[in-house]
Structures are given as C-alpha cells and as structure tokens.
Length: 140
Ligand code: HEC
Image (cartoon, rainbow, N blue to C red; front, side, top):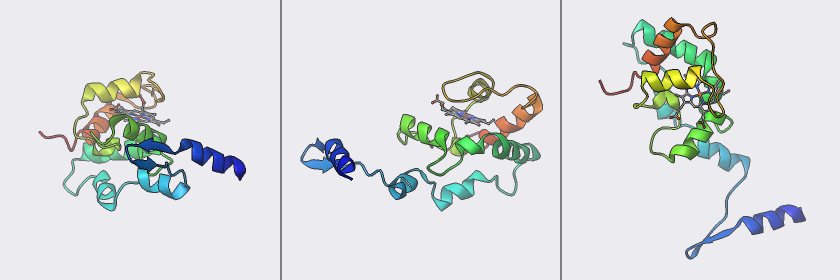
C-alpha cells in the first residue's frame, strides 16, 4: 500500500500549472483503448462488399484480430495507437492508407512484435482477399 502511494506520487509530473497523474486503473486503460460502437460497426464489411472482401474479413478474424482487434488487451492496437497518436486509426481494419506492399511486408516478414506468416498459413489467394479487405475503405 505504502509502495503504491509512493509510486503514484513519484509518477505525478508537473505539466505547466496542471498536475498530470496517469491513471493506471483497469477501467481507465480499458476505456482508453476500446473502440466506439460506430468504429466496431465499420469493422464488418457492408452488405454490398465483394466475395473477396468478405473472405478477407474471415481471414482477418482468424489470423489477425487476436492482436489487431479492439479492446485494451489487444497488443498490436495498443502499440499502433501509441505510435500514431491518432494520426491514423489504431485498428488496422479501419485504416484507409494501407497498401498491398505494406500489408505483404508486415504479414510475410519478421517485424518488431509481429510474427511472419508462411505461404502454408496464408496462401497467395488468401493474401489477395486480405488486401481486398484491408484496403476496402481506401479512397478509390
Ligand atoms: C501476435 C500478434 C499479431 C498478429 C497475429 C498479427 N499482428 Fe500485425 N502487428 C502486430 C504488432 C505488435 C504490430 C506493430 C509492430 C510494430 O510496432 O512495428 C503489427 C503491425 C501490423 C501492421 C503495420 C501497421 C503500421 O502502420 O505500422 C500491419 C499492416 C499488420 N500488422 C497487419 C497484420 C495482418 C494483416 C495480420 C493477420 C494476417 C496481422 N497483422 C497479425 C501484431 C500482430
């Protein structure tokens, strides 16, 4: 108890006149990294989506969502949120700036924090569908 009081006191930093105390309670963390209902509804392809986009969404759910979905426990979303600071959506399913090249690089090559997927895990045609899904919101 005494330890956590000391910790909280030492973490309180002065920013201008306002004192900023980071809130590490599970509730604060959850609300910070959870998507809104509107964002969640956009993750699912709309009713006139192509068959390829729908298959890509299924692959995303099976192979990517465990790290890239919403919720404070989703490590990739959390990291991308910190990296981009709101410049682009932390949820990759809502990005409008992803290219085939970038998606393929991240999926196939070992990167910081993300495992590579082999051709046996994601086939070239799976990749096409994944790209179709993750670029569906890009302006044409
Ligand atoms: C085990 C967790 C995990 C899985 C599964 C995973 N990713 Fe990632 N992904 C990450 C992490 C962590 C990062 C951030 C890497 C970094 O900080 O450079 C990332 C980054 C990315 C990025 C880069 C975004 C950017 O702008 O930097 C893309 C694109 C991406 N992932 C696509 C996918 C796709 C598509 C799948 C499914 C086929 C997938 N990821 C599965 C953890 C994962």
